[in-house]
Length: 213
View: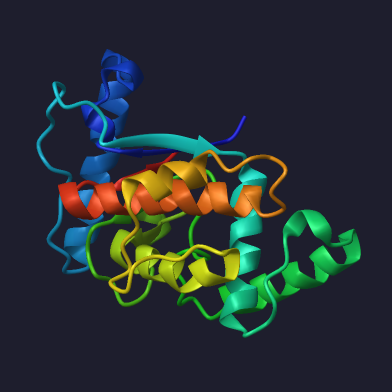
């Protein structure tokens, strides 16, 4: 059991039998209405089943946690160490730092549910926290795929990832990161980084939301 990440969810017939289709359409409708009440004009593009999902991937939930820890260490100017290499006590101390940064409510990587919710190809300065009555998955936390991509690029050097000067990464290099061998101490962080970066690129290019599930 782990986190699934999809861009172009409604295009994906493998995940959308009639019951699943109705569920996701209703969820997007609630999201659209909630965004409109915040003055944000965005909606999921029309579906194209022939195109399929623009990105479909996932990771163990622990990988996302390790990536968030690495991001906070990088943000604070500390050495980014592999989560696998530290003691349980040190990891717990680092998680306290993650919680401290989360309470700033500014990071799109940190301020998002682990298991559900959306990142939109909209340049939101800060994550959205929609009211509970809007019933938006992910406890109403909505991030920006554009801002998430920027945060990933900021983290990249701490993991030994070197995007181009404009923040882009070739598809070949991205594929290498997805296939990082298990012997690499940063394998969880690199895999999570690559999955999210690929999702951001697909979201920004196609105008679709990244959907956690």
